[in-house]
Length: 221
Ligand code: SF4
Image 1 (cartoon, rainbow, N blue to C red):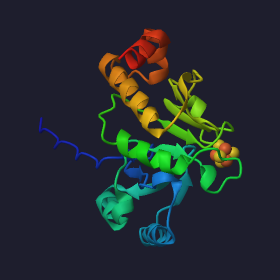
Image 2: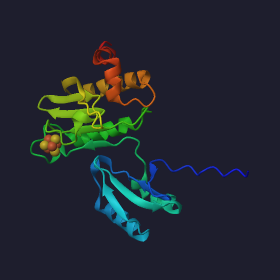
Image 3: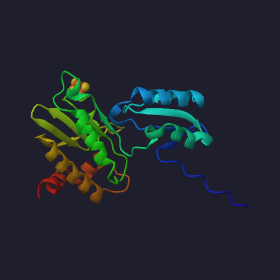
Image 4: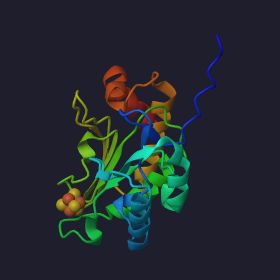
């Protein structure tokens, strides 16, 4: 029997939809912000390729849906820099830049965090949320990594999940400045990457290894 040619690998970030031959893609929208220029580009692409819809995801991302197989590369290219794939997206709120309840600058923190996370080879799906105050509009308590701004600094949570086994993240440290926050984040992620099992999200990881083991690894040196 003649062997079928191998299926062409999809570009990073492109997902096959349930409908055969259609694909979706989330353009890069760092910090949930889209400039007027990019809105125009997205609108032009959606109209020109007659794409059925753009959806807002629960995680504040745009999802361009219904892209026919033959147009995937072109659509991404046409989107320009916004067509770049971001491995790890950090959900954030406006924080004290515009929100009257904001205690910390969540936008700046999220920007730095997203840059850090995109340099790390994380073992499995990873979600992060940065909220400017304890109202937690970015769902920091149910994210793999959550940051919450308070009067005296940042609270860092690890191991949250909003999936079918909901878990509130455990507090690793409170009232820390940016530098200390990143030290704790880096050490926590190092430990997670080293000790995790294949496809183990942080919530299940914390349950398996225990919070004390994580704290020991992060704070003992
Ligand atoms: S988490 Fe706090 S700072 Fe951020 S949008 Fe909500 S209320 Fe405002």
